Image (cartoon, rainbow, N blue to C red):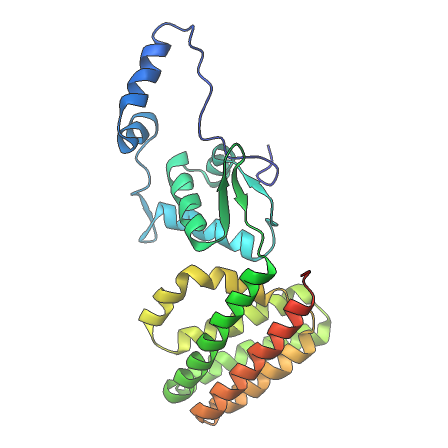
Length: 257
């Protein structure tokens, strides 16, 4: 079954006529939730990949698919199918879905299970409010702290964006847009800021991919790079704020009321 066409089914039907089946069900139902999970599935959520808990690895994969549009709003997500696809048990998948619900990517609905959440006009407007504050702060910090190596990294991203625009490659433009903003955040050198923003970065990534006027966005990125290279923190903050406001109008004007 496709992961884009199914619903989470956290409960499996049990044939109560099988010997001992009813007693087994009653025993599980009498347990505390954590005990029930341990009795029915391997305790895999504590496993790690590259130092990250397995549930976080699964969550990042799922978050990326939503942010990049592979799973559109309304897509129903099945624990069983996702566990099979990612090669894990259903425990880390279930925990990843709960985390994505808290981040605003997924809704857990009665009788439907987990569904990719629709970003409404109101939610998108709220995200742009966050971006306005965030990107002005990020630009100011980068202008104050960036070294030549950091500027070289950012220049490479900007140049890749220009090549994507000139080639008319909309997918690459979206990737370059995301890379530009994520590189800026990295260049702040502020790990606390990055960790605080983690719950919204995926949704911001989704916003970056709603851009249709790639030439305008690329030009604004180049202007912001120039301000950062001049080490003028106030100018960089002002350019970043203007960039977000222009994107806000473009995205919201294209959404239904």
